[in-house]
Length: 304
Image (cartoon, rainbow, N blue to C red):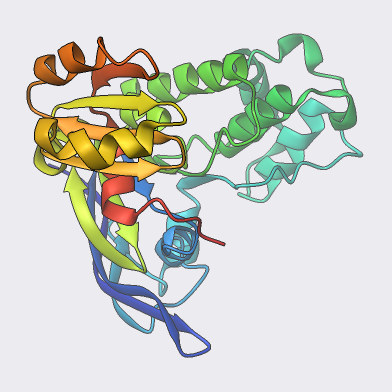
């Protein structure tokens, strides 16, 4: 496969604390690759190093066959970035934001103007061409930020939590646009806290915690390798009491979180039959998903 991004044994510390610890990644042309991890896992620091915005303490990076950070400027000409927070210029119209951003890449105004109609169509913002940014909804601003990242027709797109703060409808629109980009052969590197987003969009994923790579593979591989195939969630005020007496007998593994017991099983039928007779309890039977994997690998405790 054509490797677009290669990182080998990256190390980075701040104030004596190791935030990226021996990370190696290989990302291929045309795939959407996801970086998952709790707050402080090292995701944003990794993105900054891959872009040449932060220098690793040690390790090697190539981006589009160019060494980073030594040739980061040349590489970034061929890259688009969707930051975690929208940083659109509120004094400009939608079209003016695209025009000014394109100039940063040395593009001629005529070249940018020729691209603006297709970018606005891609972002479903054609009728907002002359609207000022403060008049846009959150979803519109996010789509404009995505369109802006494409103004230079990049080969690679870095997206740092691209749908945070959006309602479900806006998220689904962004997802569809990102699928279209990979279908066009563009390479996407994505960080997200939404496990359903990662499961829907990403061809492969890397799970980071405390700066280390702890698991990697396709969404299906991560689920099959790390978690039992079926999950039964048991709810109710007496769920913990029930778990202490019965859960181990029906589950390969179980966890108690508040008033919910998560039972991880290979065959759910005996447990479901038992729960049907427990009138004080409610339950949900479902297949294991990427969120189950994430919580098993990184824990359920809050990260600040």
